[in-house]
Structure formats: C-alpha cells, structure tokens
Image (cartoon, rainbow, N blue to C red):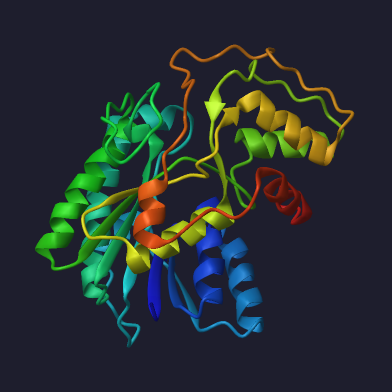
Length: 312
C-alpha cells in the first residue's frame, strides 16, 4: 500500500503499526484525540521515523466524535483505513453500554470517513472479548458469547462495519486481537506492572497464574495488521496472537528470569476475578494461510525490547 490512515495510533498496537507501515514505505495519516497527553509520544515517534527517511507522516487531531464531520483536505487519497481507536477500554467503563453503543456508531463513522478519504479497504480492531469465556482454542469460527458491553459492542462493530463497508464499495477485514504487550502499553496491564515492579526492585503481587494464555509482542501484532490490510480476504475475520500457549505463571517466571532472576513474585496473593478468563489461546493458521504472516519475536526477546526502550 502507498498510503494508510490509522485511528488510535498512540497505543501499544497503534504505535507499533505506525513504525511497521512507515518503515515499509507507507505514507501515513494519523488521527489522534484532541488534547491527549499521548500525542507527544506519537509526534516523537513520527519525527524519529522522518529522520530515518520515512515517507510523509501527517498527524491530525480528530477525536472519535469528530470523524463524522472530517473531510479529505489532504490533497491525496489513501488505500487502507485502520480503525484502532475505541473509548471505555478500562475498568468499569468496559461494562457501560452507553459508552460502547457510541463506539459502534463511531466505527460506522470511521467507515464513512475511510470512503471519503478514498480508501478501498477498512480494517477494524476487534477483541478476544467478543468470544466471552471459552475452554476451546479460539478460531474465527468459534461461537461468540461476549459477556460485557465492550465485547458485545466489538462484535456488533465488526458486523455492522462489514455490511456498511460493502455498501460503500470497500473491502472489509476484521481482526480479533488477543493479549498484546510492548512499548506504550497501559501502566496497569499485567506485563507493564511486572516489568516496572522488577526493574524497581519491588515484589509484585498477582493471581496464582493458572490461566492458559497467549501473549503476542506489539511489533508482531502490527506486522499482522499490515499483512491483513494488504492481503486479507474481504469479509473475513483474523485472529492476531502468537499461537503459543503457556500458563500465565510460566510467562511470569520467564519474565523474571530475563529482568531479575532473584526477585520474588507474590503468586496467589490476588484472587481470581468473578468472571476470570482461564483459557485464552488462539489458532492463527487462517491468518498465516491467507496473509503469510507469522509471529517472529519470542516472549523473552519482547520483554528485553520493552524494558530496553524504557517506556514504563
């Protein structure tokens, strides 16, 4: 692709996607929330990439509720629209139906904006929350039973934007992203919390770690999004994960081995939640078959890169 648009470029996946697409020679239009303190971060990344000789990167303030009114005044048309931005992703907000009902509307606004910008493909960022709790290894065909407003809205947004994109004459690709870690992740996510704690000589507390999990590094997730934007089949849903599964405790012990082998971890000091997901693993074979993408970065290597960038 020559040009792409990204909403939500300041987060763990979005910032990695900016790097991946820019270094592949793609001109970018980044839509950011007005007044967000994270805008300085993505501005610094853009300046770094431009110094490396990257193609033009335009950053424009346009919050979710302003996408409906945005017109294409850039003088160019774009190829792929990546919609990553989503409100109410943390804490109690994940259960607020009013917030997430608006998110579905904003996703439709994003699809309409993609058409105005000349895009031929709309790529949406869904979530494992669309499945709810499942003992099965997740695949695009696994039945969906979301249990909170966030998951219900993500599922709805995927279905609604698919129909709308087709009405507008665009190719539509939906992704369901599992547990991503890496630079620019939220401070309260487990991996960031553990990395911060161990680098500062603290003793982190967590559950017993019996969950079966799949972690994928942000750079790999970004490469997957780039691949589905280029080669994903119209109307399909693709899982983005590492395809490797271990207990959460095993992941944490490896993280400790990388950063602070002698540190103590407070396993079992935090009880499992009422709706604790105990199995979150994925079959990524369809993603690989259709796009050629395979994850490259091991968990240990990802932790080294994350800690080395000092993004905590």
